[in-house]
Image (cartoon, rainbow, N blue to C red):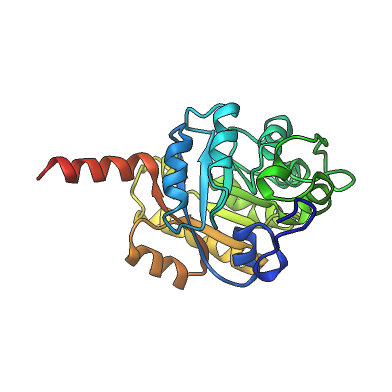
Length: 261
């Protein structure tokens, strides 16, 4: 295929995760904190829709990130990246390495939401700087084509992690350019002083409030679902991005199971 042609997929999107969501489908994702292109090669061939490469909590530097993003090429898995903070200078090199979406942590106000939408778009819509780097090669298009389509293709995923963010959620979700809102239940439980107590009454109330606001805004909702039963329940509640596993936990569980026989 010529680099000058655009390999489009279902729904007219080049980004497979965005194509699935635009078609009304749910997608599954794994979180990857291990700095390993080899591991990404294996996970991307599992049939999972997206990998979220975790620079917030993982030991992943930019050079390794570039190799991890490249390792998804030739698969239907979208490379998404969770950045350490909501800062445009952190987002630029990640997008230039070929990421198809950015997951922003700790978005707690409309102003912070506006910073995310600006960081993932070129002027005049945003503040992303142009550089003829590696993104076009990963996407399989010319540099000129990448520049033309990037604003529409890149997923902007914000994470809601605090009671204050849920209180401000209507204003946050009114900001144009947000594709997905993720409810970080464990972080929320920490903020409430009830770590891991997802059935605590205050947790249930706040998560329900967040879900209602996200549904009302018409934004795609994301959350953790670590079993088939949890995934069915989340989808019934309106979730369309399901975080189905964490690489370290999955490796540890498989290793323990193998060591036990």
